Image (cartoon, rainbow, N blue to C red; front, side, top):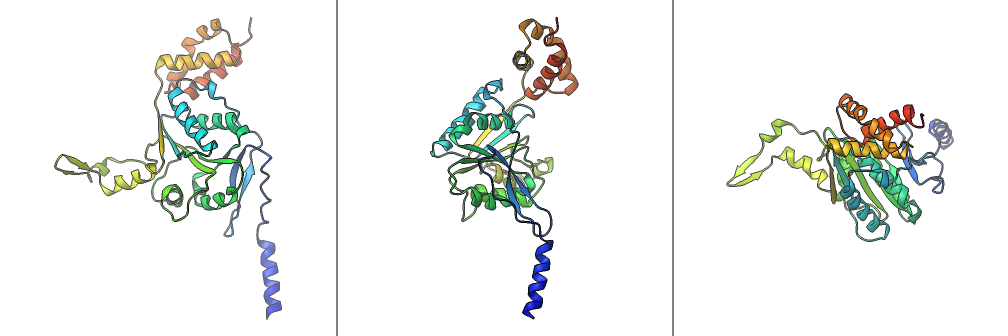
Amino acid sequence: MSEDLEKLLARLELLLPPAPAPTDWSASIALRWRKTSGWNARGWLQPVRHVHRMRLADLQGIGPQIARVEQNTRQFLEDRPANNVLLTGARGTGKSSIVKGLLNKYHKQGLRLIEVEKNDLVDLPAITDLVAGRPERFLVFCDDLTFHGAEDGYIALKVALDGSISTTSDNLLIYATSNRRHLMPEYMAENLETKYVGDEIHPGETVEEKISLSERFGLWVSFYPFDQDEYLEIVAHWLKTLGCGPKEAAAAREEALQWSLQRGSRSGRVAYQFARDWAGKHAGKK
């Protein structure tokens, strides 16, 4: 019987995906969490070969937000108390670019980035175990994070932030970006649950549940849409970076405004996209 069982187990091993290779910590300053598919899914950290080298100096119009997140990150690098960070607000205003810029600026001091998809947040304990004891300092980065209910990732993130007998390692923080302050859709019907006790307002259970995740981030940083002058300043900055002179930047002003109207947004992302388009057509022409 034992011989037959051993043969069966040997056959099963052939069907299993191979064990992931050990993480090459020196291959990159950024890594992605990857998983095999199937019932016996395994996760591993994959080095990012081409890291986006964003400079904090190129992020215009969000100086106060950069200062807050950078200060928190320096505290983390210096092994001082620091918070998990939630960056929320208008799209295209530089939320994820700040995180990339911090990695670019501080990777020589040991900062590393681990990008994790929302559906893989359930693997946060495994990621924590992998980096615990490493000399580097890791930011687990979740970009454009939104939940639509009590998903597995939602519950896992709540537990990881503050709610379990275990905790993340001292060399790991979670930085997340979202267009929603409370990370979940908010509906008018939820306001009907609000109760008034004297002069006090008591939100309903649904609202309280939604707030309970976002409030576990120790640091909230909010971003707002740019006005027209701020948008044009960002356009001028990127045009200069891309090799255009002051006269070219002035000539691009009207087209930049038309571009923003077509996109329905005056964000830093839209300004950057316009500058690339315009510089590609006009820069260096005589």
